[in-house]
Image 1 (cartoon, rainbow, N blue to C red):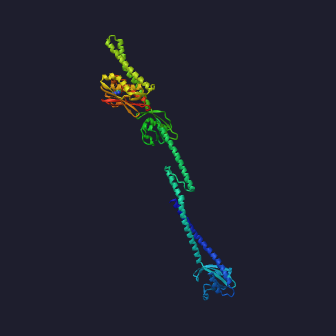
Image 2: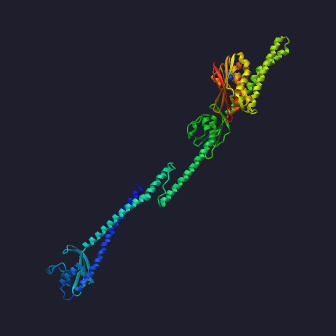
Amino acid sequence: MKLAERLLAGSLLIVSVLVLAVITIAGGRLRSRLAAEQRDELLRDARLVATMWRPGADPDAVADDAGRALNYRVTLIGTDGAVLGDSEFTRDELRGLENHGQRPEIVAARSDSVGSARRFSASAGDEELYVALRHDPRGFVRVSIGTRRFDQIVRGAQQDVVLAGLIALVGAILLALIFARTVSRPVTELRDVAMAIAHGDLTARPSLSAPGEIGDLALALHEMTEELARRLHALREEDALLTALVDSLNEGVLALNDRREVVRINERGRRFLRVTTPVPFPSDMLPRNATMREAIDAALAGEATEPAELQLGGHTLVVTARPLEGGGAVAALFDLTPIRRLEAVRRDFAANVSHELKTPLTVVNGFAETLLHDEDISPEQRRSFAQTIVANATRMQRIVDDLLDLSRIETGGWVPEPVTVDLSGVVADAFTTVERAAHAKEISLVAEVGRGKRVHADPTALRQVLCNLIENAVRYTPSGTVTVRADEVRGGTWIRVRDTGIGIPPEHLSRIFERFYRVDASRSRTEGGTGLGLAIVKHLVEAHGGRVQAESQPGRGTTASAFFPNEGGS
Ligand code: ADP
């Protein structure tokens, strides 16, 4: 039942009980008060009548006159109890009336001078109230009245009370309605707002129009919600900051609660552990790696762990875990893969260099020793041996030169000094270095670079880049065409060297810019390659803020390209 309905029902009940109580209690009292008052009045009237009953006066005439004047029944009774006059009976009828000497009011008046009684009167056909007054020496004056009048008065009063009760009821209903409007409605609204807030809707606000304590309550709720929203906002901001912070870390970070659930994990952590399930999720869903699980178990048991290395999904990771205050643990994963790869590259590099230098050194050593110890060598042989030694020494020289170039660029000892360069001049320059080789293989060299085409680059570096690319193109093309083109795009220029040579199988294409990477090592060597040309190109171009790429179709040709950004771009 609603508050307003309860209020209405309550007030109706109170008014009804009040009306009933007034009717029963006040009705009874009113009746006895009326009787007492009437008795007094009747007594006063009896005294008046007594003054009229003088010696010699006709008692019946006195009774008739007084009865008419007072509008009561007036009876004059002799000391012997005989009725001498009565306003309700004629003189003849009087004689037929019985002796009144034993009537209770007369008996009482005889002894106390005043007597009263209430009883049914057969002659009046009604309950009557009698008051008798002793009037010595003539007898008694009795005045009486029917009590039906009292009942009428009491009933009238009761009807008034009922009417007043009805008016009170209407008033109560009106009051309840007003109450519903001013109290019940704001209370209901407050309840709805409080429930909305409890369900997480912090935009809900109570209206502040209610008066009194309800208004105070609404204001308190309003302020509480504001404060709650403010704190929640601050918490969310803090959480967002923390998430951004943790996500920006290079380490993978995950936090577990004491129920072994992962409650937070950053992007890096998800990538390392290959989990996409939204948090929270049970730690069983993490990869089954013994090292990691041991670390997490130890931290959950309250023990910080030393960094431990593990292999996961092709990554070398280091995991450290420590317990959290108040239960749970946090684990950090650091990716060692690039460091391990670098170490491998360094190892490979040393092996590669040794390997590259070993063959020509052996050759030089062998031939030099033969020249030194073998006396029976013909002058032609001697000449040929010496040429071999020179050729291998030159090869070693080239390798060492290339390595020196590379290390200079890599260690930052060389910094490009870009200027605006006329590309067609540099291309023409580079062509001259391969002219002989191209001519021998019947390769035509084509420059599709307009005169005056400008590039923003270090001139020496640009020249080396073009030379290396064109040398490769000629080296790996049995016959055909080598074309150099410049494509201006947004932000810079792509310089493309296209050949019609042997091409590069797709599986090698992504690796040809690595040091000493060759598709066909012996072919490269016989053609005079060091395996470092494209690595140098890549480093030089990247030092300019550019990039390199190669496209190829085996058997049909290759296009190697270098992008040089415009001045101010990268
Ligand atoms: P190299 O001195 O061996 O040419 P590079 O670093 O210049 O070394 O090139 C690496 C490898 O890439 C070469 O050994 C060759 O296998 C391949 N390559 C480079 N350019 C071309 C090309 N234009 N056509 C075919 N293969 C190429």
